[in-house]
Amino acid sequence: METFYIHEANMERLEKKMAALSKKCKESNCSFVYNVVGEEYRTTENSDGFEYTAKFYIVEVDGTAKYEGWRFIATIDHHDEGNIIRAYDTELPIPDKYKTCGPTCEHCNKIRSRKDTYLVYNEETKEFKQVGKSCLKEFTNGLSAENIALFVSFYTQMESNQTYTGFSYNAYIDVEAVLRYAFETYKHWGYQKSRRSFDEDDLPRDYRSTKERVADYFFIKRRPYMLQDQLKEEMEEVNFNPDSEYAVNTTKAALEWIRNIDEKERSNEYIRNLYILCKEEYIEDRSLGILVSLPIAYERHLGKVAEYEKKEAKVAEEKGASEFVGEVGQRLTVNTEDFACISSWDNMYGTTYLYKFTDQTGNIFVWYGSKGIDLESGSASVIGTVKDHSEYQGVKQTVLTRCKVS
Picture: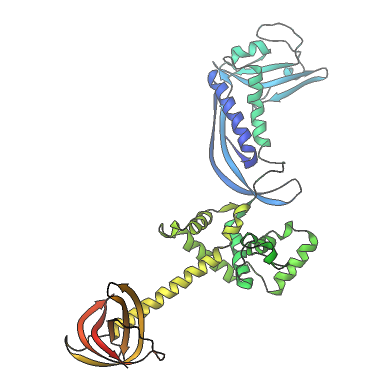
């Protein structure tokens, strides 16, 4: 079993060859299996010498052109000055005589003008035999010389496909690394939407979205030399540091949040897309725009957390301070600390207003009234009758009715 690391751009073409070869070997009862067992990301260079991160598939291959103890060893390419041995099995020493012999078939003993002959080896008798193209099939159960050549060359192809020299390929970005640049960019310049969000005529000439700025700084070595100097000046001016404690720790905290966000929150399409990207270790550069919006999404999340904690703290404070006041049916006068309408709704009798207020000791009162009251100071003197004593979210409150406010 041999392991190869195949560049993503070569994989589709190579898989077709592996499938074809596997089918031919199966027909001849020859062993050939391959499995894609994983993938990994590596830094490599394109044809211009620029480094980029590419995806490589991990492929395990095993096979032998073998039949009744005989297995294919090498192709012998005959020349006047000697023979070129194109060995498939490089570990088995090949007898010297095959380096200079003529194109005779040692199976049928016919001498013909052959350019190539084929060397087979019997594992039981330790015998080598040079055979012609027609006789080869008898040692491979019908696997032709052409397919044997494909079989042999396949391993060389596997080696060569571990690199890629073309122009069409996917470049991948390390998610955590580029997010450190995104948070550092957000810290100094805030979040700027992509150009697609605006009419180009409405944008200033020097407008740069967060995506553009992050890409410039993260891929600075790919930018023209003159632009590199300008970008370095921009970064130095604000002490831009993607390896700062802030950038590193905030990135980790934001990833921890988004990667563990619940299914309900993922019902939002934008959050779902961000969640999917952040679950990856590497992404394609076409997804950079969504990824670098994580800082603002995380800030909104922190704002909601702060608002929730503030609300919880207020509820806890009210739980400890508020007590029931008076007896049901008793007429009370309440000097309020804060008086506010917290809700209103229409019904068949008109509009109902829900007022909430506290007295000077922190006791909470509520009143369902039919009149809208607007107080500039937020405080008032309320005279009302105790209708009920109830609890809301564990907080005691006294319900009043028939109130007069002054």
